[in-house]
Length: 267
Image (cartoon, rainbow, N blue to C red; front, top):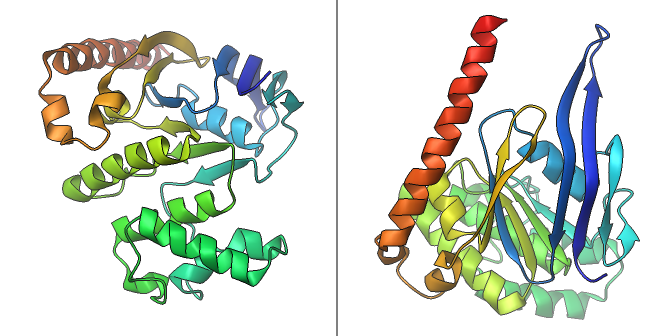
Protein backbone atom coordinates (compact mmCIF):
# COMPACT_ATOMS: atom_id res chain seq x y z
CA UNK A 1 0.00 0.00 0.00
CA UNK A 2 1.19 3.52 -0.83
CA UNK A 3 0.95 5.98 2.02
CA UNK A 4 0.89 5.81 5.79
CA UNK A 5 -1.23 3.23 7.59
CA UNK A 6 -2.04 3.27 11.31
CA UNK A 7 -3.49 -0.13 12.16
CA UNK A 8 -5.10 -0.79 15.56
CA UNK A 9 -2.46 1.27 17.39
CA UNK A 10 -2.66 1.41 21.18
CA UNK A 11 -0.21 2.75 23.73
CA UNK A 12 -0.05 2.00 27.45
CA UNK A 13 2.57 3.63 29.66
CA UNK A 14 3.53 1.77 32.84
CA UNK A 15 4.17 4.00 35.86
CA UNK A 16 6.76 3.36 38.60
CA UNK A 17 4.00 2.80 41.18
CA UNK A 18 2.62 -0.13 39.20
CA UNK A 19 -0.29 1.78 37.68
CA UNK A 20 -0.55 2.46 33.98
CA UNK A 21 -1.82 5.16 31.63
CA UNK A 22 -3.79 4.09 28.57
CA UNK A 23 -2.71 6.89 26.24
CA UNK A 24 -4.10 5.56 22.93
CA UNK A 25 -6.68 2.95 22.08
CA UNK A 26 -7.24 1.24 18.73
CA UNK A 27 -6.29 4.09 16.37
CA UNK A 28 -6.97 3.29 12.71
CA UNK A 29 -6.15 5.70 9.89
CA UNK A 30 -5.04 5.52 6.28
CA UNK A 31 -3.22 8.62 5.04
CA UNK A 32 -2.49 8.81 1.33
CA UNK A 33 0.55 10.35 -0.33
CA UNK A 34 0.24 14.12 -0.50
CA UNK A 35 -2.53 14.47 2.08
CA UNK A 36 -2.54 17.34 4.57
CA UNK A 37 -3.99 16.27 7.91
CA UNK A 38 -4.39 18.22 11.14
CA UNK A 39 -4.99 16.62 14.52
CA UNK A 40 -6.43 18.34 17.57
CA UNK A 41 -8.15 17.54 20.83
CA UNK A 42 -8.09 18.42 24.52
CA UNK A 43 -4.95 18.05 26.61
CA UNK A 44 -4.20 14.43 27.40
CA UNK A 45 -5.86 12.94 24.32
CA UNK A 46 -2.60 11.42 23.03
CA UNK A 47 -1.90 13.71 20.05
CA UNK A 48 1.83 14.00 20.67
CA UNK A 49 2.09 10.33 21.67
CA UNK A 50 0.60 9.38 18.31
CA UNK A 51 3.01 11.68 16.47
CA UNK A 52 5.99 10.22 18.35
CA UNK A 53 4.87 6.72 17.36
CA UNK A 54 4.59 7.84 13.72
CA UNK A 55 8.11 9.28 13.95
CA UNK A 56 9.44 6.02 15.39
CA UNK A 57 10.45 7.59 18.72
CA UNK A 58 8.01 5.29 20.56
CA UNK A 59 6.96 1.72 19.83
CA UNK A 60 3.21 1.11 20.29
CA UNK A 61 2.14 -1.53 22.79
CA UNK A 62 -0.44 -2.71 20.26
CA UNK A 63 -0.86 -2.51 16.49
CA UNK A 64 1.63 -1.18 13.96
CA UNK A 65 2.51 1.71 11.64
CA UNK A 66 3.47 1.07 8.02
CA UNK A 67 4.77 3.51 5.41
CA UNK A 68 4.44 2.36 1.81
CA UNK A 69 4.02 -1.18 3.13
CA UNK A 70 7.13 -1.15 5.36
CA UNK A 71 6.67 -1.45 9.13
CA UNK A 72 7.94 1.58 11.07
CA UNK A 73 10.40 0.27 13.68
CA UNK A 74 12.33 3.43 14.55
CA UNK A 75 13.26 6.89 13.27
CA UNK A 76 14.47 7.25 9.69
CA UNK A 77 14.75 9.88 6.98
CA UNK A 78 11.44 8.87 5.36
CA UNK A 79 9.60 10.64 8.19
CA UNK A 80 10.81 14.12 9.06
CA UNK A 81 9.89 15.93 12.28
CA UNK A 82 9.42 19.65 12.92
CA UNK A 83 9.17 20.44 16.63
CA UNK A 84 7.58 23.39 18.44
CA UNK A 85 11.09 24.70 19.06
CA UNK A 86 13.38 24.39 16.05
CA UNK A 87 16.02 22.18 17.77
CA UNK A 88 18.61 23.83 15.54
CA UNK A 89 22.38 23.79 15.94
CA UNK A 90 23.35 27.19 17.35
CA UNK A 91 27.01 26.77 16.34
CA UNK A 92 26.14 26.32 12.63
CA UNK A 93 24.88 28.90 10.18
CA UNK A 94 21.52 28.58 8.44
CA UNK A 95 22.84 26.78 5.35
CA UNK A 96 24.78 24.21 7.37
CA UNK A 97 21.73 23.55 9.56
CA UNK A 98 19.58 22.92 6.50
CA UNK A 99 22.12 20.65 4.84
CA UNK A 100 23.06 18.71 7.98
CA UNK A 101 21.11 15.53 7.21
CA UNK A 102 22.43 14.98 3.66
CA UNK A 103 25.92 15.90 4.88
CA UNK A 104 25.78 13.10 7.49
CA UNK A 105 24.52 10.74 4.78
CA UNK A 106 27.56 11.45 2.59
CA UNK A 107 25.77 13.33 -0.18
CA UNK A 108 28.25 15.26 -2.37
CA UNK A 109 28.69 18.86 -1.20
CA UNK A 110 27.79 20.38 -4.58
CA UNK A 111 24.46 18.53 -4.49
CA UNK A 112 23.82 19.69 -0.92
CA UNK A 113 24.63 23.31 -1.80
CA UNK A 114 22.20 23.27 -4.73
CA UNK A 115 19.43 21.79 -2.59
CA UNK A 116 20.04 24.25 0.25
CA UNK A 117 19.90 27.19 -2.16
CA UNK A 118 16.60 25.91 -3.55
CA UNK A 119 15.10 25.46 -0.09
CA UNK A 120 16.27 28.87 1.13
CA UNK A 121 14.22 30.31 -1.72
CA UNK A 122 11.18 28.17 -0.92
CA UNK A 123 11.08 29.26 2.74
CA UNK A 124 11.92 32.90 1.97
CA UNK A 125 15.40 32.97 3.52
CA UNK A 126 17.48 33.34 0.37
CA UNK A 127 19.52 36.18 1.89
CA UNK A 128 20.12 34.49 5.24
CA UNK A 129 22.18 31.41 4.43
CA UNK A 130 25.30 32.69 6.18
CA UNK A 131 23.48 34.01 9.26
CA UNK A 132 23.88 32.26 12.59
CA UNK A 133 20.78 30.80 14.23
CA UNK A 134 20.88 33.21 17.18
CA UNK A 135 20.61 36.12 14.72
CA UNK A 136 17.17 34.98 13.54
CA UNK A 137 13.69 35.63 14.89
CA UNK A 138 11.55 32.74 16.13
CA UNK A 139 9.58 32.63 12.89
CA UNK A 140 12.73 32.56 10.80
CA UNK A 141 14.15 29.76 12.93
CA UNK A 142 11.01 27.71 12.26
CA UNK A 143 11.51 28.33 8.54
CA UNK A 144 15.03 26.91 8.90
CA UNK A 145 13.66 23.89 10.77
CA UNK A 146 11.14 23.27 8.00
CA UNK A 147 13.80 23.62 5.30
CA UNK A 148 16.10 21.23 7.20
CA UNK A 149 13.31 18.67 7.31
CA UNK A 150 12.65 19.08 3.57
CA UNK A 151 16.35 18.74 2.73
CA UNK A 152 16.18 15.08 3.80
CA UNK A 153 13.37 14.60 1.24
CA UNK A 154 11.04 12.68 3.60
CA UNK A 155 7.86 11.04 2.38
CA UNK A 156 6.01 12.35 5.45
CA UNK A 157 6.47 15.58 7.42
CA UNK A 158 5.33 15.40 11.05
CA UNK A 159 4.74 18.73 12.79
CA UNK A 160 4.28 18.96 16.56
CA UNK A 161 2.79 22.37 17.41
CA UNK A 162 5.40 24.00 15.13
CA UNK A 163 3.76 27.44 15.17
CA UNK A 164 2.50 27.55 18.75
CA UNK A 165 5.26 29.82 20.11
CA UNK A 166 4.97 32.45 17.37
CA UNK A 167 3.19 35.79 17.51
CA UNK A 168 -0.11 36.05 15.63
CA UNK A 169 1.21 37.76 12.49
CA UNK A 170 4.23 35.47 12.12
CA UNK A 171 2.02 32.45 12.75
CA UNK A 172 -0.30 33.48 9.93
CA UNK A 173 2.65 33.88 7.56
CA UNK A 174 3.95 30.46 8.53
CA UNK A 175 0.52 28.91 7.99
CA UNK A 176 0.58 30.28 4.44
CA UNK A 177 4.09 28.86 4.00
CA UNK A 178 3.00 25.38 5.14
CA UNK A 179 0.16 25.43 2.59
CA UNK A 180 2.54 26.62 -0.13
CA UNK A 181 5.08 23.87 0.64
CA UNK A 182 2.32 21.25 0.72
CA UNK A 183 1.25 22.22 -2.79
CA UNK A 184 4.76 22.68 -4.22
CA UNK A 185 6.29 19.48 -2.85
CA UNK A 186 3.34 17.05 -2.74
CA UNK A 187 4.54 15.86 0.68
CA UNK A 188 2.26 14.18 3.17
CA UNK A 189 1.98 16.51 6.18
CA UNK A 190 0.51 15.65 9.58
CA UNK A 191 0.23 18.59 11.95
CA UNK A 192 -0.62 18.57 15.66
CA UNK A 193 -2.14 21.78 17.00
CA UNK A 194 -4.20 23.12 19.91
CA UNK A 195 -5.68 25.86 17.72
CA UNK A 196 -9.05 25.03 16.14
CA UNK A 197 -8.61 27.78 13.53
CA UNK A 198 -5.17 26.46 12.59
CA UNK A 199 -6.49 22.91 12.33
CA UNK A 200 -9.24 24.13 9.99
CA UNK A 201 -6.79 26.08 7.84
CA UNK A 202 -4.08 23.39 7.67
CA UNK A 203 -6.12 20.23 7.32
CA UNK A 204 -7.89 18.99 4.24
CA UNK A 205 -8.54 16.18 6.72
CA UNK A 206 -9.05 17.12 10.34
CA UNK A 207 -9.04 14.54 13.12
CA UNK A 208 -10.55 15.37 16.52
CA UNK A 209 -9.25 13.10 19.27
CA UNK A 210 -10.95 12.35 22.58
CA UNK A 211 -9.34 11.37 25.91
CA UNK A 212 -8.61 8.99 27.72
CA UNK A 213 -7.72 6.59 26.36
CA UNK A 214 -6.91 8.66 23.28
CA UNK A 215 -9.09 7.73 20.34
CA UNK A 216 -10.52 9.23 17.17
CA UNK A 217 -13.74 11.05 18.00
CA UNK A 218 -14.60 12.61 14.64
CA UNK A 219 -13.08 13.22 11.21
CA UNK A 220 -13.78 16.10 8.84
CA UNK A 221 -13.04 16.60 5.14
CA UNK A 222 -12.55 20.32 4.61
CA UNK A 223 -12.07 22.76 1.68
CA UNK A 224 -10.21 25.51 3.56
CA UNK A 225 -6.62 24.31 2.95
CA UNK A 226 -7.18 24.32 -0.82
CA UNK A 227 -8.89 27.69 -0.55
CA UNK A 228 -5.95 29.07 1.42
CA UNK A 229 -3.17 28.19 -1.05
CA UNK A 230 -1.87 31.52 -2.36
CA UNK A 231 -4.81 33.36 -0.78
CA UNK A 232 -5.39 35.72 2.14
CA UNK A 233 -6.06 33.41 5.09
CA UNK A 234 -8.14 36.09 6.76
CA UNK A 235 -10.53 35.93 3.84
CA UNK A 236 -10.73 32.14 4.20
CA UNK A 237 -11.65 32.58 7.87
CA UNK A 238 -14.52 34.85 6.84
CA UNK A 239 -16.15 32.03 4.84
CA UNK A 240 -19.47 31.21 6.54
CA UNK A 241 -18.71 27.48 6.70
CA UNK A 242 -15.41 28.20 8.47
CA UNK A 243 -17.21 29.85 11.38
CA UNK A 244 -19.78 27.08 11.58
CA UNK A 245 -17.12 24.36 11.75
CA UNK A 246 -15.01 26.35 14.22
CA UNK A 247 -17.93 26.76 16.62
CA UNK A 248 -18.92 23.10 16.26
CA UNK A 249 -15.43 21.83 17.05
CA UNK A 250 -14.87 24.32 19.87
CA UNK A 251 -18.09 23.14 21.52
CA UNK A 252 -17.04 19.52 21.04
CA UNK A 253 -13.65 20.06 22.69
CA UNK A 254 -15.16 22.21 25.44
CA UNK A 255 -17.54 19.37 26.31
CA UNK A 256 -14.59 16.97 26.47
CA UNK A 257 -12.68 19.32 28.75
CA UNK A 258 -15.72 19.60 31.01
CA UNK A 259 -15.94 15.80 31.15
CA UNK A 260 -12.25 15.56 32.06
CA UNK A 261 -12.67 18.14 34.83
CA UNK A 262 -15.66 16.18 36.13
CA UNK A 263 -13.62 13.00 36.29
CA UNK A 264 -10.86 14.81 38.15
CA UNK A 265 -13.27 16.22 40.70
CA UNK A 266 -14.91 12.82 41.20
CA UNK A 267 -11.51 11.26 41.79
